[in-house]
Amino acid sequence: MANEISKFDAIKSLTPNADFGVGEGGTITWKDYNEDSQPSDSDIDTEKTRLQTIYDGQDYARKRKAKYDLLNQDEMRYDDLVNSTTTWQDAITAIKAEFPKS
Image (cartoon, rainbow, N blue to C red; front, side, top):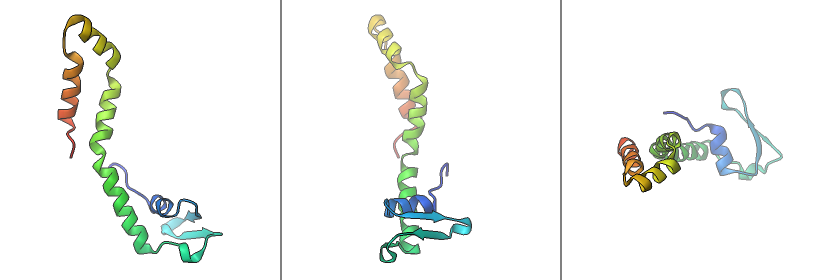
């Protein structure tokens, strides 16, 4: 797992306008926030799992983007147009084959 979703991430997702802190050991300190609106530990754990699933499901996309960023795609497309080649298409196809959608 490249990036683990934190308790802070889950709480921020559940309560985007809340003012809180997460201390050592995961202790939550709420600041000027309605106690009735505070998510339960179970809600936070469920949200962590949901966010982690979304993040993990996009791993292929992050890896593809890193490879795409290494290509000089504009130049490749221009060279393909001028030279009647498929270098750019071949490079994109290879990246998609290396990192398929899950």
